[in-house]
Image (cartoon, rainbow, N blue to C red; front, side):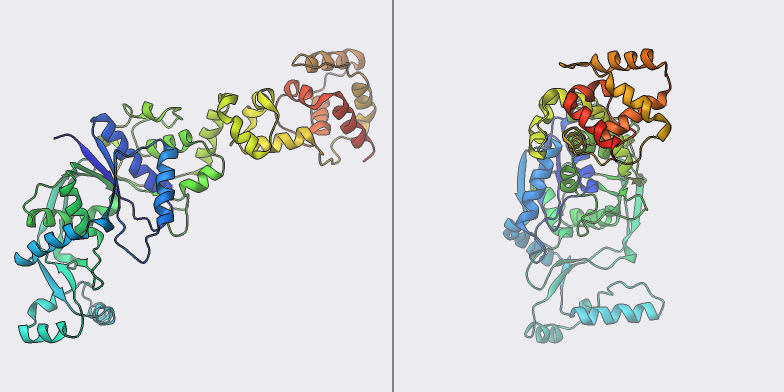
Length: 449
């Protein structure tokens, strides 16, 4: 049997960079093993799951370069879960509970006040048949899986030898009173039914793994191999949240970042590989080994993403960004893009330079009074058009020869007059884009401010 991995998001919010990391590591592992990547929507939560989030997740995965081999929905598989639950009932591994949420909360408070861990004490297992029937006549139960209360051990592909004592855990609820299933059991049933061989997910699922290993054993099924990677954190050390929209893939895409940059940073953080942008997602396949991924958390730094994105844009051809530039209202063509790409952190930055080329420019007091006569002389020496990349060099050489001024401040003053900024693309590229008329207009506008 071949390798089968699954990425199982809950469609209750937009996919963030941490979710993308898990998807990427699964996809890379599947490709390394010539296996299958299954996208499984864990959408049993009727109140929070939303079709718009499913669509967004599919769009985000496609943008990242991930195309699932198959797509499954847990909400469509309830009959299978019912069959397995019946088997577990007959085996005495699940049991009915009738406490309300208020009763459970009160019990947790009492346990905390007594210095006890706030776990479910399996009290309903002690009820006699008469009480159980009486309660059943009044309300529907929720169902819990009965843990063995032992130390669960396994060899994790990333974290190494692991052990969790389930004595300290509550028997998990596997089916709610409204007949919907929770992730913890339905995931195990799906992994068995879909032939999942490897489960690669965040380290925050370690406890879930201990519980699920007991479920695999209760069903007499061989569990998949588990690998728990370190989490991605915000720069302040806090965890990412779908609900708050932290670093969502859609927000990064809308901000103008390239998918290659997002993929490279999300994948290589916490790995043994140097962080650098890979222009093709396929080039990461031989680079990232699951066994070398760190189990420790890593901070996702937006400045680092900006840096590697800028390095990618510096060599990006016009054809790849042409449609996006048009969407931004930038119609400067290939020459404009090649002129400004080295000064763009995202494609959106091209709009800033286009506005500077087209004008108007916000002129400020950019040079001292002593340089006014020198600058007048400089602009009086402008050559006639047509202009090209050689025009700037020829013009500034003529100015220096005529005035005898070789001070770098002269060039800086010209830049400020033409753009309103003291940085930007090389003037040899900007000058032909501006044209002689616009250059003279800006010089004149400055002179009268």
